[in-house]
Amino acid sequence: MKIQLASELQSDSIVDGEGMRIVVWTQGCMHNCLGCHNPETHSFTGGTWKNVDDLKEEILKFEAQDGITLSGGDPFYQPEASAELAKWCKDNELNVWCYTGFTFEQLKVRAKVDYNVKELLENIDVLVDGKFDMSKKSLNLYFRGSTNQRILDIKESLKQNKAVEIEKYKEIKVYEEYSRERVGMFI
Ligand code: SF4
Image 1: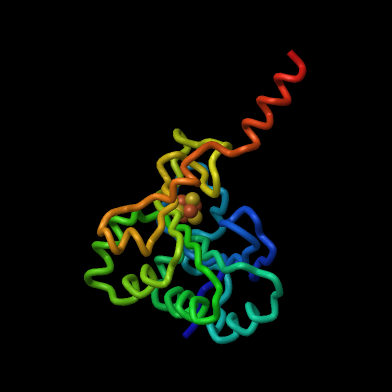
Image 2: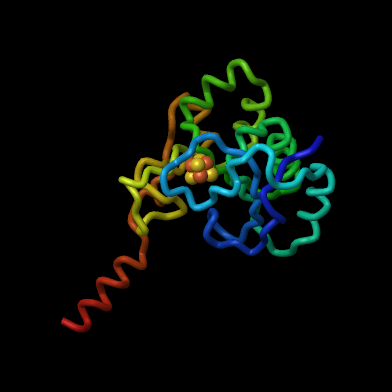
C-alpha cells in the first residue's frame, strides 16, 4: 500500500493537535479553500509516493511523540492508505488527529458506501473538520483556522451519530487573555 505525501514527516509539532505530534502531510485536495496555507499540496500529481510500511518504520524512530496528525492536502482523498496508517498507530498506542475539508456529516455519508472512509473515521481520535473559511478566520482558536471548523471527539460522534465537539477547544486561546492582561498593564 502506498500513500502520496506532500513532504517528509514532521516531528515535535505542538500546533497540529494536543501534545507533541508527528505530522503526515498528504498530497491532494480539491476543496480549494480561499486563503489555504498549503496550495502546493492540492495537486494529485505532485509530491512523492511512499510505502505505508516504510512510513511506519520512520514513525517508530521518533521519540517522545504523543501521536500522529494526518493533514495535507486532505487525508480523506486517500482513505485506504490513511486508514491503514491510522489503524497501525492506534495499535501502537499513538493517538490520531486528522484534518479534513469534509464535514463529519459528509464523511458519514461517504462511509456508508466506502469501507475505507468508515475504517479511517473509526481509527481517528480527533477530527478537525470543514473547509477553511477566510471570512471566519481567527488567530485565537485552538488548532483550527476559522470558527466554522470543529474539533470533534470522533468516538463520541460515531456513538451518538452526531458531531460532538470537544468543549475545551471551543474557547478562545489563553494568549488572548494574556495579551489583554499585558495591554492592561500599560493603560
Ligand atoms: S482543505 Fe485544507 S489543504 Fe484543502 S484547500 Fe482547504 S485548507 Fe487547503
